Image 1 (cartoon, helix red, strand yellow):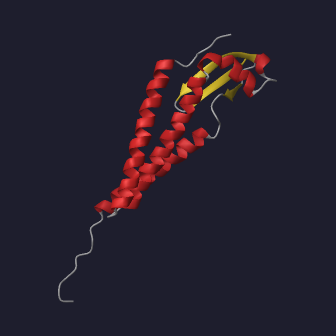
Image 2 (image 1 turned 135 degrees about the vertical axis):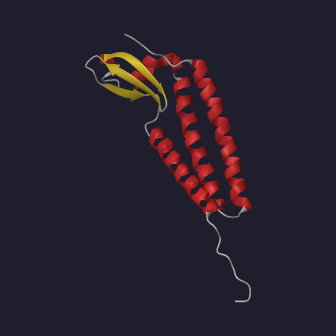
Image 3 (image 1 turned 60 degrees about the vertical axis):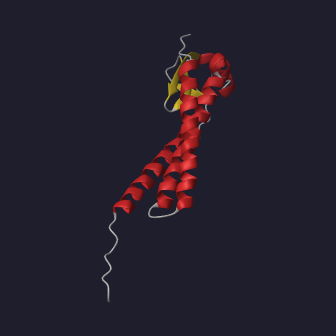
Length: 149
């Protein structure tokens, strides 16, 4: 049985970096909305959506980290009926995933909840979209008012 266990150091670095990013984006997002001004809701919303994506990433990495020593157990817990066919494991850090490879050529996911990848993707797409709206709002030239009319 071949294996590719997640390494603890990259997981810890990713967890800390994503957690700090989520914390910073949350603080910026709420303060941007609170200050108001042109594009404040778009800027703040972009930051909060980015924070959501970062939190989902932390959750996925934590799932991998907590399962690091028990990869075989995670594969057995995920699908006991297919566990006898498992020939190896593969780990992905982006998106976080632990796949149990079967000797028949297929694989199934274990350890990381399946809803995290769509949440990360959706948060990132919303964040980029709102950031682009904020940039467009910032660059928009206000109409010139002529005095006396």
